Image (tube, rainbow, N blue to C red; front, top):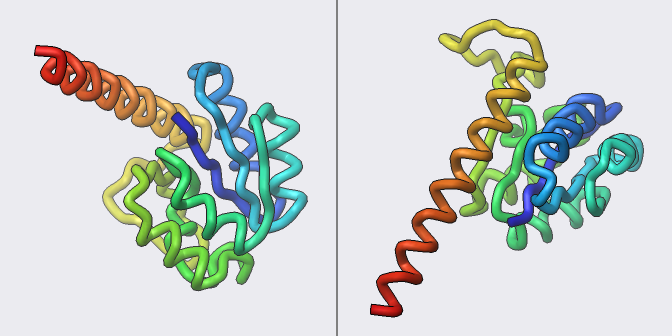
Length: 150
């Protein structure tokens, strides 16, 4: 299973997400997708298995990943101070990829009725959601494989 972490600006949130994913789910392949090289570099230093930078990299890879994780702003055109292009937002939002979004109230988006907790708690919740998704996907895949052998 391939997980894409999308981040921009300084890459600090993406770095923290990658660190937690690799600590909790080391078997997963983590792909760092940065809107800029600084963000990609931060995520690679945090342990991402591979990385790519820029609009085309993000658009192209949405077809090849199983899960994408980042702040909710990755669905919003021109977020991250303009670093996330409308084409990037459309590719991420339009992808059938499972999306795990951190409800960070930035990028001119304010998410209401979500607990105001530290960033680390949001990242823990994101990793938990990814683990649960993977476990349910594996169970579903195993059940389908067993049904085919009958």
